[in-house]
Amino acid sequence: MKPIKEDVLWGSYYSACDSMCPPASVKNIFMLGLNDFNHQKLKSLKNFEHYRFYGLIPPEEAEDVEEYDIKAMLDDLELKLNTFNGSVDSICTYIDFPMSMMTPILRPKYGLPSPSLESIVKSQHKYWSRVEQKKVVPDNIPKFCKVNPFADDPFATVDIPFPFWVKPIKSVGSYLGFHIKNRKEFDRVMGVVRQHIGRMAGPFNYILDQTDMPDDLREVDGRWCIAEQLIGGRQCTLEGYMFHGKLHIHGVVDSIRHSNRSSFSHYDYPSMLPKSVQERMTNISKKVLKQIGYDNHPFNIEFFWNKSTDKIWLLEINTRISQSHSDLFEKVDGTSNHQVTVELSLNHDPKFPYRKGQYKRASKFFYRKWEDAIVKRIPTPAEIAAIENDIPGVLVDVKVHEGQRLNDMFEQDSYSYELAWIFIGADSHREIMQKHKECIGRLHFEFDPVSNDQPVGQKIETTS
Image (cartoon, rainbow, N blue to C red; front, side, top):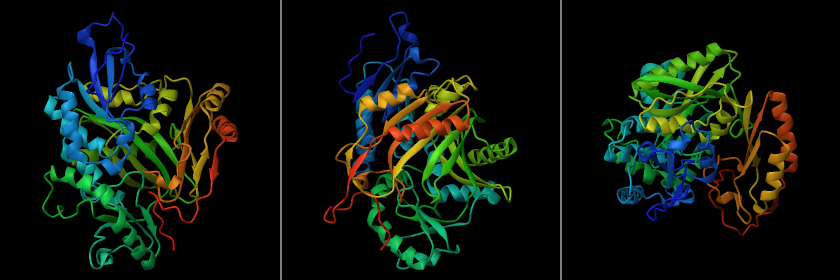
């Protein structure tokens, strides 16, 4: 099939549809922020031959929060869609803020099925979300309170004992999320937050202005934070979707953290939590999603289970599939979770497959560096191809480039830097760990130290 050129679009990705595919059965799918890695994952979709995928918003722009002028982005997207020579059958994304909040603004303008913007914002506004959760699952959420970093005394509203977490009302990748041990640390963090919170607050506040928020919550905008009681245990994520008022869970993924309890080490699928615990988490998810009016959309909800107390804690709601899980589902179930996003956007029940993949288990590992540095060398494409060829079930996605300063990376947690994602499929956990060890031994990165006169980039330093 010859590509159809569309100059108004950033780029076009094409399905395997050939001349035998009737034009009326071909759907044009517009995906915000679509990149090459995720396009490869789309090829596992059951109806891939009937879809043409178009990338709206270049991936580099989707990740550049400095350029998040939401109104300008929406205007540009409408221009591209309005000048497209064909039907607009779907607008969707797998990316968090702001893409996940732009699709419910765009979809109604093209007569497409959509969750309500209010339900998306209720899920993503950390304080508003906790207020709604408290109404239906009060025993499964931590103590929380709002914090205004710009108040004369931000600590005045804190009624949670140390230690606790402080996070912006809206953030991405744990950006500006800090574990607070004492008052001195709190005051220092508030100074950092005041300096950097505007990066996300401005774009988020534009979205809030489109939403009918309760009067008693309206002042708590993107420039505010939330403080939360520490919660913990074995962490997992329920990924699923709501379709016509009914909840479906298509997978539960375990999230394993490093010893610092902040940075993820890897994700494991399927979960090894007891089925009874997974069922209780499902019931909690159902209550919360119905409370906020969430429907016809994918989600992933993060939980903790404290084994010693049998306590379940709801951590947060994400209004999208997790691209971190896409390869895991493909390896174990036979189809990427992009199927859920695409089919729902067309108002179809995704009917996600179960255990139809090549492997019994799959994991995603985060290959990290803990200190700032300049990237001198990354694994070459030939080296990565050799690793993937020699170790069955391995896929490596390098996240840095030569000459890059790690501190300039965005969407990182406050304590480390992601150098690469390593996806592994196998028939046992032991085999996965063996493959991971071999893979790490062959990934060759080199770094130069950072000199004192080089300015600090995105990473926020809070230690004195």
